[in-house]
Length: 123
Image (cartoon, rainbow, N blue to C red):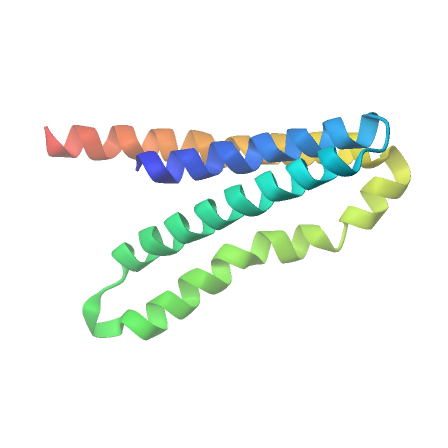
């Protein structure tokens, strides 16, 4: 559960780096750092989440359950992604990325709650 929490925190944090990028003077070095951090955190979070989803599947129905889980994993991003242009046009990139970081907080809270639940069941 710790890697799952790490991935959720990293993704939310890198969105805050995009806020920094949006409000600062144009800098190619800062752009490279922010994009690198975003790719690294996204890779960690996706890998850990796929491993977690795989652990939830029943061996008798692995392919079907994994297909459903992975589709549900991408659904919120697809639904919200279509609205992102409207938000950026209305409020700007800095507010958009702050909002995107804020949207990551429920995932962090859910991982903490799941960790506590697993620790209680193990006791």
